[in-house]
Length: 532
Image (cartoon, rainbow, N blue to C red; front, side):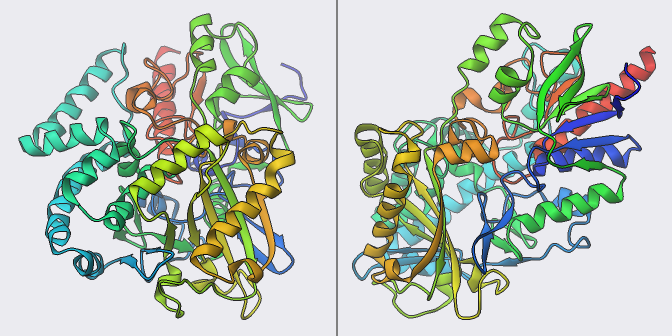
């Protein structure tokens, strides 16, 4: 080891939210932890940036719900300055005509459904009961490593604990769990609801960041994945972090530094050093950093295809990771607005403008958007969710003006002519789509930032533009994330761990992979001390 090498107990590659969570828990146990970040700012995809003079917004991830409450409390994020406010209405589904649907707390969802269908309102109670039991089981497993196929006694115990949780479910609840893991969202939602816009209210979550139709088997699980969170202490609610998503990761960085974590910015990791068959350090910015344990908060394909040297893992592992499916067909925009939009179906200003505004009024609409993208290159009528966070947070825009997030599906990674040539055309197409629901929206746009799937890959390391670090399909979930035999955050190279969204439980700003990876590292350090 050269005298100039930088030495820590643990190195974390990437200062996204999961890397910061992992670093915090490691440092809380007295370990010397260094985090190396490629960009000039911490946060990964959870950052707030100015995109037009005087206008700031969350650049990629854009809303709060899935961040685990245990992590919020352990890191004391509210004491670090984080403030989260709830949407006044959860969701608003406009149409181009006069119909609309709202959802929210205090019985709003049921009243709105009843306004459309008494039968659907009655079925909403049964649907909510089915969801509640399934989501309860999922929440139990968020902060646990899944059973590791091919593992030892500890994994047998984990499997038994899982079985114990399932045995607490009634037989119909077990059937519902199986349905949500295997069926399409359309299959399940049509079982309960007969009205297009009501089906769309729940079906939208099945295609968020999922390059699929709501009729695709397994899409019901993606719907579930968006339901196990909470905001401001309210289960299932969605909220806004004052100052944008970057406020979350800035608070996390403060918590880390309070524990002695060293965070080094503008230090892109070029390679992981492998010596004597184990990860021993990294090369970053021309310098060598060493540690007994290396934690990768990066996309699995980046880890296995770019950072690890050839031959570091078995050929079958490399081959499997080359086949890791990674594409969410997401196009992400921020727009600066001179005024609030006026929707044809609900034109007056009101609490509905604080909601997630979902422009996709039926499952059929969502299915066509997917089929169009497969056939024509992108959706002729895209699925768009708009948030206007400046209705809740006046720090983001000049007085009287606003910022809006546009999260859009489906825009595949591969497009004729390449995204550098097609980006502006796609952005114009999306704005025109919103303008059909809210005439005058187009002329209110005074500035914009458009991120194609390729831009998401370049800026945030989201290979294929996949916001989840890999598709959330049945073959890439739970014990198969990122692969069978290595779902416990320990990668197939001693001393190397994965703490990003490519590990269980998957994507979203949860912090759970970082929390769980830290537990695996603690366990291994105890074992190492006993052996030594």
